[in-house]
Image (cartoon, rainbow, N blue to C red):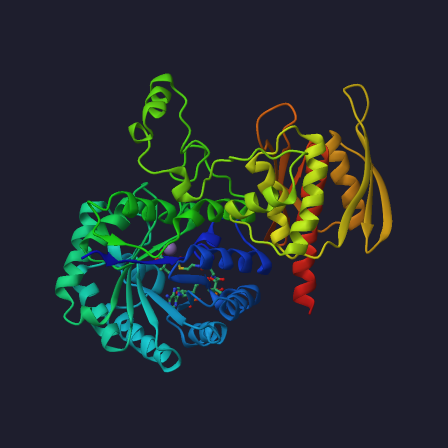
Length: 507
Ligand SMILES: CC(=O)SCCNC(=O)CCNC(=O)[C@H](O)C(C)(C)COP(=O)(O)OP(=O)(O)OC[C@H]1O[C@@H](n2cnc3c(N)ncnc32)[C@H](O)[C@@H]1OP(=O)(O)O
Ligand SMILES: CC(C)C(=O)C(=O)O
Ligand SMILES: [Mn+2]
């Protein structure tokens, strides 16, 4: 009979370890709620000891999430475990996830400790965590480069100490499917008390094998799979959740297992992560890329017209990519609008829908057809409750290749109008400099990009900016049919997020 494999999502922890992918508290909470809708079994909400912001995020998520286990990472140190428990203790189902490296390389160069010392520390810290929490996961960092006999011993010992889950990470993405299958198979057969714990795997994508290795491990008996949305994560990333889940679903003949995931939430989850982190999804990304279900060539189109099974192994609908059967435009009513948002995975109150509908009508006056991507662009930021300290009121740009680009920008700061003028290398640069004069310095522009939301000459432009204050990065997004306006909105959005975070730290 098919067995359930659990999905452990670590987008909020390992995913956030991707350079430039930090999220603020509201963004993390928003993502956690989406992960709950996706029905992941475990949400690793962060690394509580890492910073006060991480602690607050794990705690807030633990208090808000009802249907998934909420875990915090902790080194094998009492202080880390105290902090992890403090953060997750209000969850319906809390978990402490403690780890220590087990490979000779890490022991020699990083931890500077013997195998015996590490084994002892692992056991002590699992016991320590167990005093607080019945659900304790232990990870042997760099397991795939560790001595197998030592792994059997450490897993046996931590299970005796009370670990409920033992995790086998391929921390540096070094293993291959055959080798990893053998490792998991051998752990299953050489750790005498293994039946008392869940076997988990956690694969990185340095050689592009993270999903293949995870699936090989599942075949060998792993019952918890750690992964991230869009494969986000340290360096080349982690195993992509959507690819693991859809492989299991699509190849039931090979994988005699199932997950609890609501696959129709995969696409909305992917878009949300991309928006929150500013990490774009490559067009040919499996499952959630723009081209994943696009058929361009004649022979393929002919096949698709004859029967979809000729070129589609799964339906776009099954991953939440629904075709727009009702064309939305300026003559559409709020029923069709609301229905469309629901199918795209956006959940709003009646009042929010009615406000959004007004914005939709303004956009519909500017664009002939409103595509799904336009709707996503319209509503995405509305799901986040950030306080808008600065609001764009007006701007005027003088630009050309014979004059110095000059921008006059008027912002509202708590209903008071503030105006500045600046010149720059181009219209966007001039506008940003005018905004800098209003807001003040201290942060730097790290990245700026512009792309079209949909096709056509009336397409909207979507600007993304990253600003940096000290070590923290804040992403901003702005959308408009005018690209300068989109850029200004994105810049103000990033500034507002930064100021929200600073205000929150002061409280
Ligand atoms: C494989 C992974 O993904 S592991 C998770 C990686 N994620 C992160 O590191 C993000 C969050 N990290 C942080 O914010 C910081 O690194 C902190 C707060 C955890 C620690 O910061 P610092 O105290 O300044 O230490 P720093 O990061 O420079 O060095 C790590 C220390 O932890 C020790 N350490 C590393 N892993 C472990 C472990 N699993 N158990 C116990 N100690 C450990 C190291 O030996 C080193 O100790 P030392 O200070 O005695 O030399
Ligand atoms: C902390 C562990 C699970 C990890 O992220 C890794 O080893 O990659
Ligand atoms: Mn990892």
